[in-house]
Amino acid sequence: MFLRLLFVLLIALNIAVGAWLLLGQDDVHGRSAADPGVPALKLLSERPTPPATVASAPVAAASAVAAASSASPASSMAAAPSSPSRQASYTCMALGPFATPIDLRNARTALSNQAARMRSRQEQTTQTTGWWVYLPGGGGRDKSLELARRLTAANVGEYFIVGTGDQSNTISLGLFKDPANARRRRDQVVSAGFPAQMSERTEAVPEYWLDVVMADSGHQDWRNRVRGVGSHSTGCF
Image (cartoon, rainbow, N blue to C red):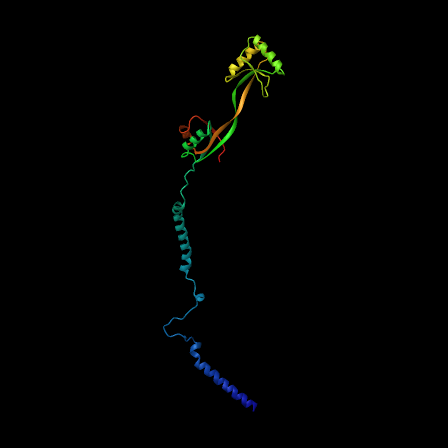
């Protein structure tokens, strides 16, 4: 029984294989699934790279580089900014001294359109007021009077005894603007036998200055606007 069933199965299997070979013969031997005349589809990865395309890529790249190189100088010249103009340089000066604040104010007005910056300042300075010829005090009023009588006897006139202050009892022989006249008076009294001395008299007086910052191109023109004062370099501000 088993053998008979096995025989039947083998026959059925042979029939199935024969039918498959018969019905599927066209597909196996290359029957196309597309309609006649329609090219078959292929993947991009299956397509070979055209030689002309591969060769033209370096040529195109070289052409692009050459074009960029030829255009580079012109574009550089067009893009390069023009060199900036030379910046003006400045000179910083102190003008003065001015005798009064009014003179200083007038100078500021005269230079208002020329100076880039200005500032006013006041300083204290020592000024010579004259030259004093004198005989030192003898230590007391009586001794000063005795010395004065001796001067009179020696024909040395024009003197007086200082009565107050730090120079009390000093005999003043004159105050002179010209130091040459002061020396002449001192030598006269010394030749008469008295120890005359000479000293400079000074006092503190204010000075007015104007500091200015001017362009080098016109900093000399200030002399045409402000007269009677000097100048020297100073720090810029």
